[in-house]
Image (cartoon, rainbow, N blue to C red; front, side):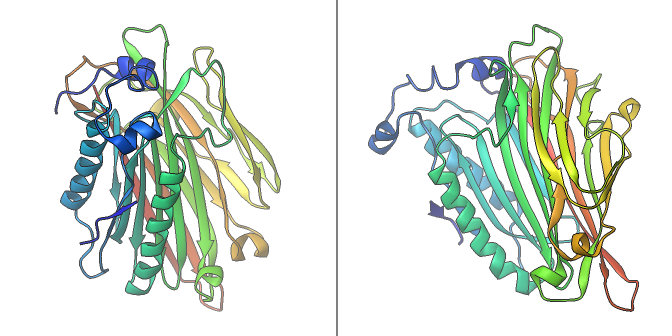
Amino acid sequence: MTDDSSHSNCTDRRTFLRATGVALTGATVTAGAASARGPPESDAHVAKADFSNGISTDRIEEVRRTARAEYNARGGDFDVTPAVSNPDPEDGTIVSYSYKIDANGVPRQYTGVAGDAKSAAKLHGKAARRATAFDRTSTATADGVATQSASWNDVLHDEADFCSDPYGCVTNNLDLKQLDGDGDSAQDAYAVKHFFVMEPGTQKYDSGWVNDVGEPKHDWSQNDMGNADLDEYDPLGTHDGSQSIKVSVGTSGASLGWSYTQPAVTTIDESSPSGNYATWNEEFNTDAARRNTNGMKPGSSCWIDQEATGSGQYDLMDLVSKGTFYDGGWSSDTYYLKHTFHLKVNY
């Protein structure tokens, strides 16, 4: 781990997806340490900032360039990574950031967003811990995802926390996958596994604020490649009470799915296939659900126009986590924390 606190051409996406772990493993390695590890990977880099200053977009780009240069020096071959996501802190401040390109060529990123100075220090520690975990996990993991014939390739792993005293925290994590060997010369298929969590202030800060409503959203309409088609999403329909939820978002005969346990909440499906977005409203309607950490693991997949190799960077989708908290006392005051990842892909 390295602490850094103080439209462009790229590798063909389909070639990358087929060759990662084969061509890159066999590439000439110019760094001794990388040779001992096998496939090339960068170190995990960490950037930190005070709440009053924050980490700028330029600083994030600098960290990414440093990791990419390390990856290439150790045998990789990236002008740009296949996918990138830009964290949008909404009304918060980015105070911690960690980034690594793993041995599968997959970027792994953590963003800590603070709504106050007190939360910033805790998020500094979280970024360092995630960087250590990224270094420890030298290859991307499936994280409980079942696939068919390894057809779905990981292209990006993203994590974020937005914390604000006294309200609570919203966690926004994702795995972005692309379907390899889809047999379609005109379009590509992408899928996301989303880990959405709300931790109420009553647990995080010992305040009176509790969970009210969670609103994760997968907005595939926010793309500039054209002809987006939301193919699958889950959970579908309304789910009331504690139960096991099975998520299946595979397409074109390639399965992709996982399961999770829904707590005693009501999850309402507010998606629009015709509008190319999937969104849910998770109502925390029991005292236990309001006062303890809860969330969901939705997913979706989408077909979208395939762009020409070397044509540049394109917007793919927005992944949003919004959590509304309310003062559990006599007051009916509410306050929400919202975090967005703007996902982009390079061709």
